Length: 340
Image 1 (tube, one colour):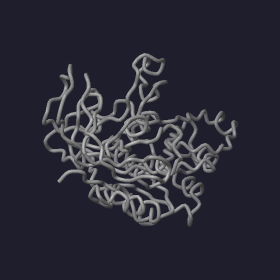
Image 2 (image 1 turned 90 degrees about the vertical axis):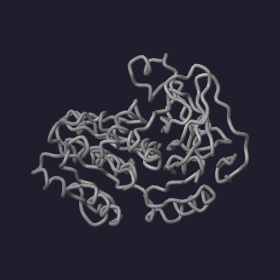
Image 3 (image 1 turned 60 degrees about the vertical axis):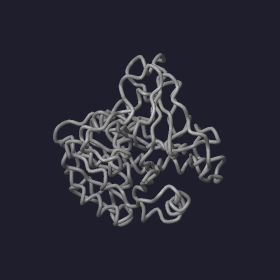
C-alpha cells in the first residue's frame, strides 16, 4: 500500500509499505480522506518536539473499517468511521480526573504512532467513531479540527450572551467561530490580517471583523464594549507577543483560551490578571469531543465543507505541501483524497 512518510525534517515522500494488521482491540481502516493540519507541517519542518522519525503523519481522517481485531465490539467491518487521534493510558492523574487529552503518557495518532496519510491504518477501536448516514466521509475527515474548537470553548466556559473575540481566521479560528455559533453565541468578532480570511469569517457568521494591520484592535474592542472589555478571547493566532494586549482587552472575570505550542516567552503583567481575576486556560487536542461534533454535523449546525479550499489526490501530497509553505494566504484546509 501507499503511505506518506516523513523520514526526517524536510525529507518526505510517498512510499510503499506493508498494510498494517489489526491487533487485539484494534481496527484497520481504509482511509478515504485526510486533512493536512498545521501540526503536520510542523512535523515536516522539524518543529514538533513530540514526533519520532520516521513517521506516517495525518491525524484528521475518515474511512471504512476493513478488519477488526480480537475483542472489538463497538464497530464492524464496513462501518464508516472517523478517528479520534488521542490515545491515553487511563491511569495517570489527568486520566483519573477526566482530562485524557493531557495524559502523562499521551500518544497522538500521526505524531507518536503512524497516522492517516496512508491507504490503510490500524488504530484502537475505542478511537473509531461510527458516522450517521448523512455525514459524508470528506466532512467526517474534518471532525477533528472542530473538536479542537469545542475543547477550547468548553475550557473558557461561555455564558449566554457572552461576546467572543477570536484572533486568527485560519482553520482553527474558523472552526471556533462555527462551533461557537452552533452553541448559541452570536456576538463574535474575528481579527486577522488577511482580508480574504475575514471575508470567509463574515460568511460563516462573524458579526464583526477587524484587520489587525489597519485597525487598532484594542481601541476597536474598547469602543464596541463601551470600555467593559470582552468576556471570551480565543487565541488562534498563537503569537506570544500579543498576550499582554489580550489581557488588556479582556473584561473583568474574562477568560482567555490559548492554543499554540510556541516556546517564545510572553510578557505577563500580573496586576492585569489579578485585578480582573482573569482565567487563562490552555487547550490541547480534544477531551472526548468527537460525539458532540458528529452530532453538530449530522444536525446541520456545522458545515465542514466551508473550510475546504483545495481537494487533491494522494499522489499530489508534495504539491499540496509546497502550496501551503509558499502560498499560505491562498489556503484554508487542504483535503487529500486517498481512495476513489
